[in-house]
Picture 1: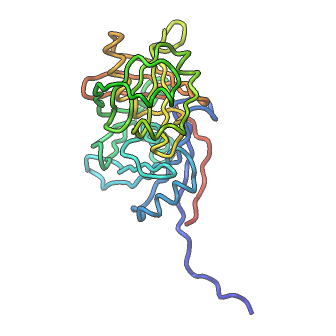
Picture 2: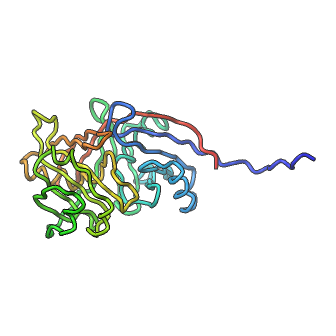
Picture 3: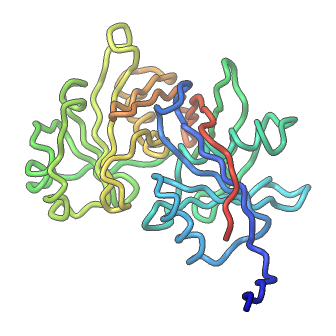
Length: 281
């Protein structure tokens, strides 16, 4: 006896995977971008992000024409929703400009915690994001930090309430870090930003950085746009210039072109489409 066919049709959702903050595929940071007709339940979004198993999945829903935003955007790691993600925002703008509405040169995203974010097409195929600047708060260097980083620390600040912002004495030390993440719980932080001043003539950038985020379910994020809302104003004050080049020196690596604008920070980068397809739910 033949089985009764299931008349229910699966929901089909487009999926794009973009490498952000790079002009070469297989470098930078990977993000999945999934435009939706309407919001799915949160548990379904979380399950899709876990299935994608990338640092971030960005979900987009178009807003009514004539409003102050073009899309609402949300970001999920494989383990949780996050309040802000730079590389997945860059990837989303790439998809919009290159595939959804190629006539656009600017897109405005509504977020649930960080207000409106604007991305525009800049020179040399750069996408330029406009983000709110983050504040840093001085703090005493936690004793447990030495067990995690095993590297001399110049100073530590608190970023965004839950992350540590750590300054080292050289790009070489940042590149060589091999943190003991098993000791991470003792520092009582969601993540650790590590940075050092660089020499643009020698290193091709003004500062280097890395981001370790076990609290988000990510041992190391390859390239992180959001942390530059603190990195850029910090180094702009230290170096006495507003336009800065950052190099995130993870294994995949990425380059960010930034400007400090007071209460806003511009973060620009290249992006490359890696794949596109359909998801059946």
